[in-house]
Image: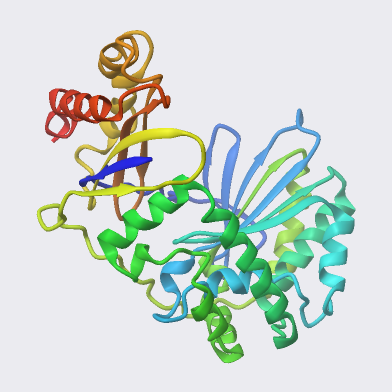
Length: 366
C-alpha cells in the first residue's frame, strides 16, 4: 500500500443549552423528540425515545481519553476502561460483570483520544434498565481498582493491539500520526505501547479515575423504547447523589503548522489489497470545514467524478476512494486509488499525482 503524506484541517460537535426542569434534572435543550437534561452535579443526559425500537441503547461517555494519559504511560485510559468491569464498592469483583451480562443484550466499551465510552444494549424492561443505570452510577463513583486483574487485562490489550496492527490502514494511520506529532499527543495510540502499559502503577490508575470520572465530565445518551419519566426518576435517584468534582484541564493538542510538515511517503506491506492514497492534513481551519465534509467525494463518485473518469474508466485503477476525518484538532482528507496486481504501479502513481494536482482541492477550498 503506497501512501503520500501532506497536510489539512479540523471540527468539533458540542451540545447546546436552554431551560426547564424535572426534580433535580433540568431540561436544557429539546429538538425533534431529542431532549438534553442536566443534573445539579453537571451530569448531562440525552434522551431519544423511539417506541418502534425493541431495545434500549445506553452510552455513558466520559470526556477523557488517551490524550490525558501521562507521558510515558500510554494506554492508561484504555487499561482503566478494561478494569472498570471488575467491581465496585457495592457490587464486588466479578459480580459486576455477571450482573451486566444478566441485564444486557450486549455490553462493551471503547477508548479514543478524547473520550471513554461504555455501551449497553438492554431489553425494553424497567428492571433491566434500572439495574444497568445503577451499575453505571456505581462505575462512575465507586469503582474499586484491583491490581490482581491488571496482568490478565494487559494480556487482553496486547492481543487487541496485535489485531489492530495487523490491519494495513491502522499501521498507516499510526505512522501518519507519529510523523506529525512524534510519540506524544495524537502520535500515541489510545491502545498504548506494551512497555509503557506494564509500567503503570495502581496509584496512577486511581488518580486518573478520581480526576476524570466525574458526573460533570460525563454524558449519558439513551435511545430506544423506554418511558422517559421513569428514566429521569431513576437517573435522578442514582446519579444526583454523586458529587461534582474539580476536573483537570484536558491536554491541548498543538495546532499543526502545515508549512513545517514535510511530504512523506509510507509503504505498508500487509494484506492483499493494493492501494495508493494521498493524505492531506493540517490543524484547525473552520473556514473550509463544511466543504470538506462532502467535496472530496464529488471527485470520486460514479460516473461523473473527475478522478473516477480519468483513472477507473481509463483502466489505470479498479476504483478510486475519498474520505474525510474532521476532528477538533485536525482535518484529514484521503484521496486515492485501488489497483490490481496486473496494473502498472508506476503509471498509477504518476497519474494519481497528476490528477490530484489538476483537482487542486485544497486551494479550491481555501
